[in-house]
Image (cartoon, rainbow, N blue to C red; front, side, top):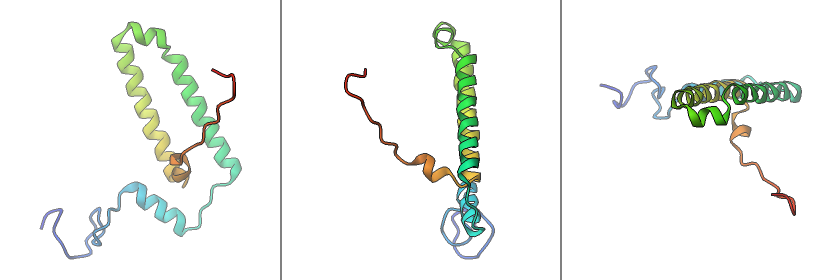
Length: 113
């Protein structure tokens, strides 16, 4: 029947229900079903590690170097994309993805530029 074929409760990515069941969706569903809650301490450690990884990226790929060398710019872009993919996967695995995608209010101080 192919991917769009109806019927059946087969094991495909739609689970036979017409609802997409990709890896992120399935991980969140399992985490909720198991009652997994990430403690504030674990969440803080993960966030701090992710920040440190971005600091390392910024240290390795200086903006001046990227502006001068297109090969270095490509390497920086690929490394940033891979870091983003891996960190997003970790947030999904820990059930933190919804919080990471939420809008964060930005406060502007008077006189600060």
